Length: 436
Image (cartoon, rainbow, N blue to C red):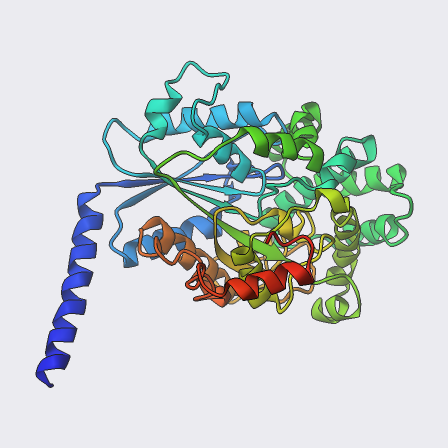
C-alpha cells in the first residue's frame, strides 16, 4: 500500500469512527412511526408497521445507532390537531427525560400530524408543554403524505366514500391476519367495482362482502375490527382537512421548526391499463383487487389544475430522474397525488402504491412474508423496500444531511441543487407547474 493510500484509508477509517462515536454520544434515539387515515398501531398481534419496524431496527443497528422505535396509535379519521396531540402524548410517555434525539416518521396523513406537531407555536388540545417536547426533535420524514391534499378525501366525506374507506381498512386487516382474501370475497368485490360508474357503489353487494369477511374472525377479534371501522366513519374531520382546498390553508399557516430537517419519500403507482394488468399477473384475485385500485386511482387523479402544487426546480429534477418524466397532476399512488407528496428534501422516489412502502407487496420468501391485497402492477420489490428505508435511516442518522436526496433511484440528483440555472428555466418553460 502506498503512503497516500494508507493516509486515505486512515482518514476514512477515522472519519467512520468519529461518526460512530458521535452517534453513540447522542444517546438513545427515539423514532416514532405515525400511521395515516387507513392505519392503526396494533390490533391484537397484527402490527400495521411490522415490516417497517423490523427494517428500521436492522438498519439502525448496522449504523450503530441506539434506537427505540415506537408505534403511535391514532384515531383513523379524527382531526389533525387531535391526532397530533396523540403523538405528543405518546412522546411524553415514552421518550423519557433525557436529551436523546427524537425522529418523527409519518405515513400518509401521519406525515401531516408530525408537521403540525412540530410547527412553532402550535396550539393543540393537550395540556402538555409541546414546545419543550419538540425541542428534542431532529428530523421529520413523511412518506406518501398528501401535503397538498388528495381529491379522494372529498369523495370519502360522502356515504359511498365512507363505505369505501371501511372496505380498505377491513381488507388491510384481513390480509395481514389471514394472508389473502377468500375467493368468495374477491368475486363480490369484482361485482362491485368492475362497473364503477358515476361513483355509485352497490350497497347490497358491499354489505354481503363485509359479512363474508367478518365471519372468518373470532368473536373477540370481530369486535376489535368493528371498533376500528366505526372509528373510520364516526369522525370525518380528517377527510375534510385533507381536501386540496383545505390543505392550501394548512400550508399557509403551518411553518417549519428551526433546527429540524424535513425529508419526504414520494410514490407513484402504475397507471391503470394494459401494462398494470400484465404486471398484476395471472392470479384472478390480483386482477379483481386491481379493479378496486382502478377506482381509487380514478378518484385520486381528479386534482383541479389550479390546485396542483408547483414544484421547485430541484424537486422537479429528482422526480424526472426517478420517473423519466415530471409526474402530471393526475399521477398518484392510488390514494395521494404524486406531486402532493414532495416536502423538504426528497429522500426517495419510488414506483410503488400507497401501501407498498409499508411492506404490503407480494413476497413469500421473506420471514415474515410480505402480502399484497391491493394489487396495482407497480412491481415494487423487497430490494426497493430496503432502499427506501435505508435512505430514511441514513437521513435520521445525519449521514445524509448534506445530500439528503441521494437514496435509492434518485442518488445524487440533488447534489447540484444550486447549479444549472439555465436547466431550471428550461424545466419551468416545459411545465408551467414548475416554479422558475
